[in-house]
Image (cartoon, rainbow, N blue to C red):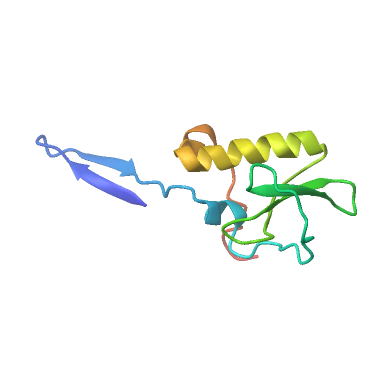
Length: 112
């Protein structure tokens, strides 16, 4: 969203307002959900655990706000744990938008 600010000299300055990233925007509108969470599952930081996918990758699975939502995927389990912790902490302290940026939205414009 773009806002136009006028100053005393009647110059128009365009400023851009960004939406703040939340856990819901991080996991997306239609997240993949883990259907079979074991009763005795040990949760890392009481927030997530990591599964190994059938393709040999590792994915973190969240406890909240949507139980079982897939979050971060990577090759090494230790890296998925590290990045998931960083991402959740950055969301919590509000610094995620300062450390990340969208290079391409992935939306194809125009008529195909």
